[in-house]
Image 1 (cartoon, one colour):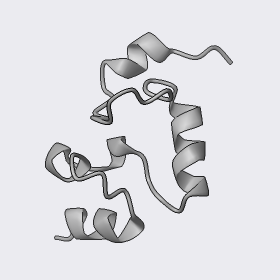
Image 2: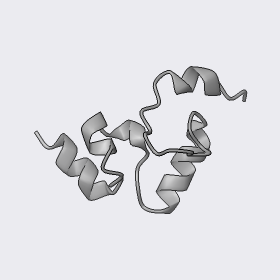
Image 3: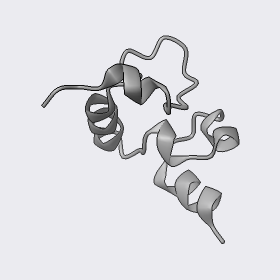
Image 4: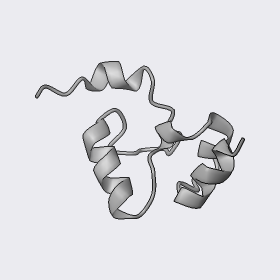
Length: 64
């Protein structure tokens, strides 16, 4: 499978400076799940900027 990194970057809201996985979604997802976290794209921008990528932060961000 060919990585569409440039296309992925158009929608990547990761604000972490120097992230080596930015735009490489499979690497990003694998990295965050191994740390019991979710990637930036799962969060609204204001929550993403806190760098709290925990499942708890996800649930709080999307609580209706």
